[in-house]
Length: 595
Picture 1 (tube, rainbow, N blue to C red):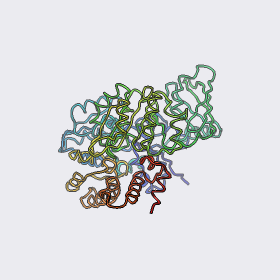
Picture 2: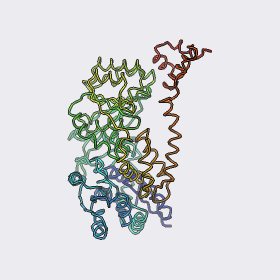
Picture 3: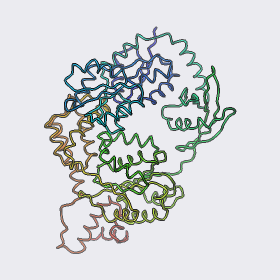
Picture 4: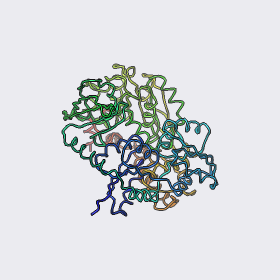
């Protein structure tokens, strides 16, 4: 009986995964495993899974080419069909201006044969490396191209440069062709594969985990899981610290785990490798630090580039401001209405600063309990006493007035703004004004103010925002929606968007989830916006109550209503309400219970 063919599919973007899984159901002779990772991550997945006894690897574009150079298993490429190309061209609005296609040859060759037959102005640029993509895309940005059609490598690079980038996704027809090719490719690798599989099983049977790099730093072998990228990155930085002879032993702590590591250099067939063996033990938890989060550069970059604010490239309007502000480490305060992207601008400041290789520490002021607040102000491990970090106080005006005063005193006394980069965000009024507490931070710390505009102040950008975000949602949700009808787009332009980009992101996601056809129509948008008006009305009313106090009543009743309003504003927190009213909790309780 013939065994199933074991295929490892490495999708360069998440939207391809459900298509692979769905199509594999049509092939009873295929045992498919699907992972997601592009470029270096895709190569690491391929190398780490060699031990799993796969017959062939399937991937796409530049990721497939890199994997071909890195593993001995046959690699089948998911090609790009003419249908895939035309679908992306339609979504990019190619008729509105110059369009450039940038990618590896496996993407651009199809365009070269098609472009003379298409009624668009299309220029094709073929690259051979990620490094070349940066210089090519930078030149195209300077030449004012309307949109970029890209493979995954150039899409990521173009996004980083703030360009209108559209990823050329592969449809189910292209994936079916790859499966058929794989079935024809069951090869002469079985003997070598079985021998490697046996040896790797021996290593996996040990309690010690093993990671091997070439002397140039290329990952050669690993018994780690895909979730262990942090320890893998740390080991990579230690390669040059391993001595030419003998062994090096050291420890590393992360996420309540203690790693005991032994490293040495070995030679095989005149090639030099660096080998790390290590075991892990759990260390006691240090307590819950809810509201205080630590991120490295890669984590911040991932969060930022997955946000709507990055997808639509609104930060481009602040490029010059960010570059100028980052020339020094003066404190910054970012203000704007709810949902205008304050947190993402803080991350953009960090990603483009000289301190990007140090931790980014986020303090979520609206999540801090009294216990964590005490830890933050007084504990020796508090971020207040660190050095060379970026510390972001998110929604600083969510703190009580007393806490804001305590924070300002602590910042001045510890001088953390001299040893770290300090960034605040605060919610401003619709007119852009800051309250007196926020102005105290500005005045005492000499903060640079960045004010973000409301979405309703930029109606002319709605079309571009919607199309760019729709392209990203198509990728994330494995959809193939071509656009928004003109009357539906008009509705989106005219909506008030009280919660700005956060609300737009939610509405667009809901529309894409529910849409089954090629276009989003006005009936769907009307229904979605009516729901938004209903859902958000109560919240907006609570923040801006229209009903005035009835001053004709007895003082006791007026006081009771004022207490109720303050309690509502403080989300039922009696301590914060009492502090805001300058009364004790006992007096507050007595006023609540008064008849």
